[in-house]
Image (cartoon, rainbow, N blue to C red; front, side):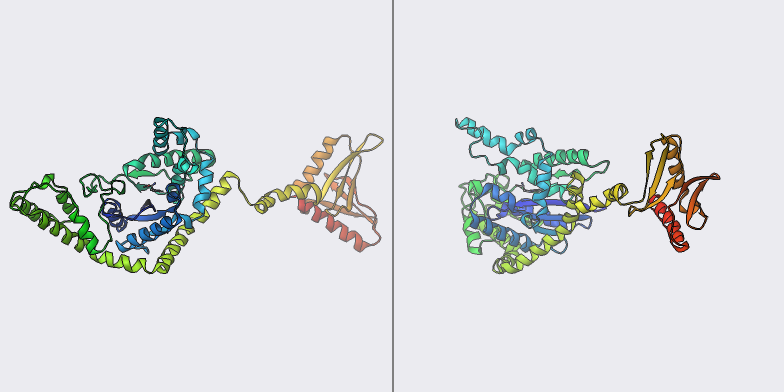
Length: 452
Ligand code: TRP
């Protein structure tokens, strides 16, 4: 069985080397596994929560799409799309919102952090908190549950969101599944082996520390960034300590075992920091050179990227559209005309089918009439002692069906209905033998419509 792996990339900012080593490279490697059915998407609705600058949103979506493809993501093999191109996702978000406890979202780290900060600053607890931020985990749950992902590779800060998706899925399954598990319960996957790269200053590489190395800057920009890596003040010729050098850590993340051993020895032997930086530059330039070229080609042909993403969205929607249809059905958002189909027989019986009607005569006797669907009176019964007798007679007639109906022609202008050798009903009188034959046929047809 294949494992469905799904992850979203929030489209704010430009990918840097840390994103590449920590997320992009491992995800692309994982997508090449024969047992993996991978879904990667640009979480551009999530980006809107953090950013209200349309140009930045647009730019970042383009850059991130180009980055993933340039790094070797095979859009034929995986399903690669923009969240905002799959309208089933926001629609599912609403269905899930309606089963999500507010208390669950109150506990979300991102929301709580904002509230704590406000309280600390003596502000209103919800100052600056949008419903987008508050409901963020529900949108993320929809991303995951829409495609019934088994595994969701994420950073540690996102584990709670995947757990919330499980909670929400269970709640929906319980309420609407009727024994069916609509949603697979997803699991967060944290890649322990994946490198968290240090930035230029040795802290974790992150845009918020302004210590990043651009992934697809020019060779000159790459060189300039590497030149800013902070080192100790040991002079050329003095032995360097590789294990206390983040320059060495960066090198390690991209080098083969042999290259690592060689570089380590050179540092121990007193390689100058300037030369060490040159080594790192060459390594990175070598690793990223081809992808960088491809990236710049892609970025200058946005129409091609658009086509790739549209094809990805179509592929995703081939799953999402029918699945959402089932979910709408499950919660009761159903097509009226399919409802008419199931309601129709009852409705017909009450107005437009043949029927037996019983009544009581002035002398206290009970009789029934049998009417055709168009209202024509076909038979009038002989008097019966009680309405129960009428009920059991008509039930026996219906149960026997049209073929068991015993009709006898009488004196040429009338016919009678017999049961257990007793005459129980008479027809009206007819002008001709043909009219009488036709009426007998209509009695059988009318009865046939009452047989289930
Ligand atoms: N919230 C995730 C992040 O910031 C991005 C994301 C959105 C995501 N939807 C997702 C990740 C679904 C995994 C699955 O990293």
